[in-house]
Image (tube, rainbow, N blue to C red; front, side, top):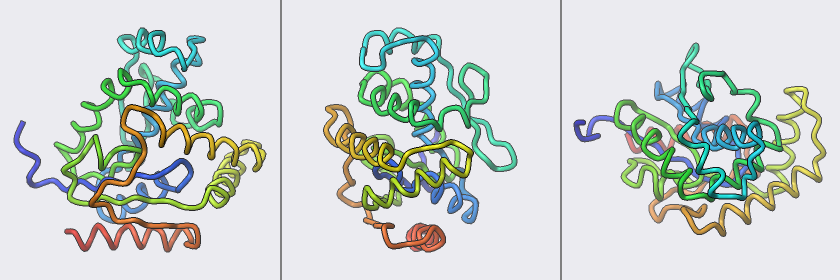
Length: 226
């Protein structure tokens, strides 16, 4: 495949609930880029484990289902939909239970390797905004734009609770906050590709920003690099 010279890759990393997916998706639409939500891929593996009654903390058991697990992304009206073994699970992967499962399976090296090439292949063929935990450090270390998006745990828990409520999913703020603090610890302390800002990443703290202000800030950073 030809070198990725003429495509632009923007890597957005950050902790759970920082608004990466929403901000990246809207910014990508405004800039005419393709948005890739890598977290949805890990959530899909987590969901596959739950459906097969596999302990997400048992690395060998999780590894055993990967050969039978097919994850693909399709775009409908510009929106990303994630398919697990041919079934659209875009809504199903957004529950807190799947969220915690995703955190566990993402610490397993075999899972990260399994998804790495799929993630990189998109950036070789499109202008992309890709978000996750290790995009700028591991998945796309040569990305032209790297952003580390963060916000206080309390702010992230409030947003996540509101987001779930909008979808009709009842969530307790305190429980969501506890999950976020636990995920932060897991993500930053895992051995494989821990969550951290790339050395050349631009730090954006959205604690005090509205969604519109956050999108404008991200879009501006990307436009400046272009």
